[in-house]
Length: 108
Image (cartoon, rainbow, N blue to C red; front, top):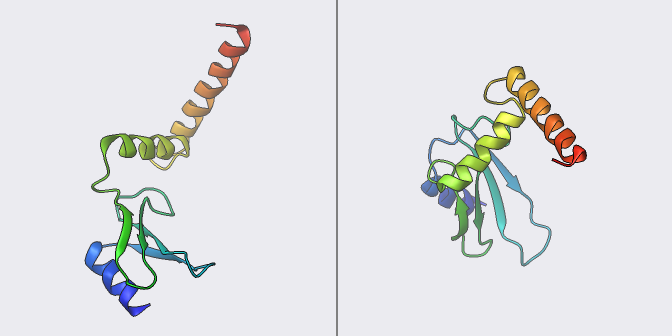
């Protein structure tokens, strides 16, 4: 565990929170969720998968360096849940979803 946290610290600094997923199988890797201060969602949007034996980073996604398409997808979720603009964005998105379902049911 010490090696895991050391490699994690070397990979990402200034993380506000860390969630480590406990291994269920001997072939699983450590999955660590991270949250930067600018991540607006409670669970964070960065994660790292680390080999449980060598401690090397296998796969990583960092919300600061993610491709534009990934960041847009994350922002879409934040707008829908009200993490960005609060209740007004939730109301607008709920209304637009309702109107879209009405439009489709009308055959437009």
